[in-house]
Image (cartoon, rainbow, N blue to C red; front, side, top):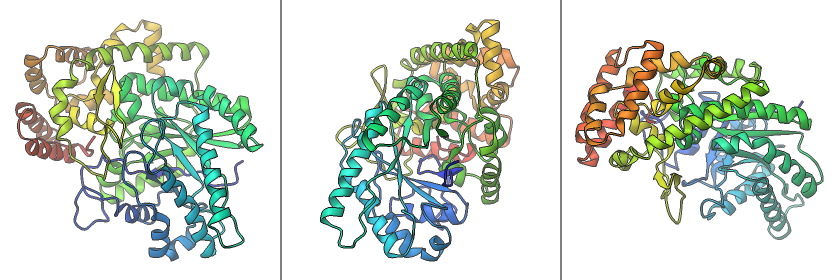
Length: 506
């Protein structure tokens, strides 16, 4: 057993909220980098979230977060110590994907916060682990630890006046984002363990490993993503047993089903679909787009039960079938999306902003590309498609399901128990009139109609709105399609209103 608390819930800065946060009297949905320190405290104190991700990847971040938390809320953190009871976990920039201007700043914050905590009489380092996004190789994970060690030793030697040197070690949480990398995570981690022992003289007793739910869907489609997440969780537990270490998977999932489907109203579904997950992200829409009491109760439900849910497992035969399902469905998704994405550019450009993001492409950022086509972040992508009445879960899914033989279909449905329920819900956000307009300008949209019709025939659900909120959403989706080449301000306003109706921005 590990001698630390493994967080159950991780609050994040994902910009997927439709409404303003409960702690901001202005009720404005945009959350500045300055206010994220208050957000972290409110997530701990009001929601009882265990962990808060402090994001340095592609966005502005306040290096003084620990100083400010201790200065403003010292009594709270005396009772709920950072690094023991509550956790701030930095997501570093990936220096292989974007300019690492702020990596040293982030690492230096680890060292200064350790000094400050020690001066205040705290026993634990407030910061001791960090996430490496878009991890692809074992040497990248080790390199982060080597860089930190060099910096800590340099500071201790040259800038520390007290007798206590800084701890020259941090724990790393690799974040695996696409299907193939998630599937190959055990091989990457096995090499990492060997490199770690060679570099530091010991093997970690446990690892926290982060699996993306959003970017895998963006890059390969929903069928591939949900299959890949499940396979990755199962393979991580196999790896842990083989290597004799404990594994604690984290999944990054938003409220939209395309991005994982974790919302306060889908906790039982999450337990059914993702057994073995030990930490979940409760993103901004989860926290701010539902009544506060509902959010608090949902987080308590996760705290009480998540870490007791048995891990997913697959037979060798089922594993091979699920891998083939994921790869085959991704082909349909890519083939279709390549021909749709240009129609979506006006919506991507006008998509509402919720955080202080850096420039997405170029010197300060990186771009996500599919088949050479630059795409927006997964939240913007998801929200844009929902807002025109075409939930992106449908893209390629129907045709891939139709292609399955009886054995393949049985395996898929066994490992995706909420298949029918999910698409019955998703169909309520489809607007066939809006889709018809899109088809007149681009015949590629007919493939998406085919996906919808296949799934409707399979499961017998009704397509179109079933509630008053969904009726309003459908009307706005039609308006958006009709004015999609118009003024950005009008597009932004429609997307904002639709987001409130569906309880997430993207």
